[in-house]
Image (tube, rainbow, N blue to C red; front, side, top):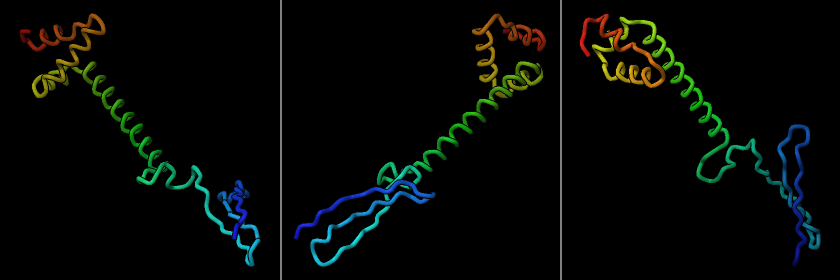
Length: 127
């Protein structure tokens, strides 16, 4: 009772998903064809049995990129406001001095920015 088994894969035809069918040679009384789906990159579970999907991976990458972009824009807007508004820097000096210290440190490392001295003289404070 030996069967000659061949597996044939049919590629995409008119938008259909690829199918695999197992053809059994009719050496006995019955001939039958079994159809089964072939996993493709558009399928849900392609990365394994642990539940990761390509669709979920793509969604996660989009979320990370959007979060990075939002944080970058937010930090740029904060730096711009700190760079232009001395009253805002004074408010930061009163409420969050560590943020202002970080701003001064970066300004001193990047160039000869004397914002600290000019702010302290405008606020009548000592270093």
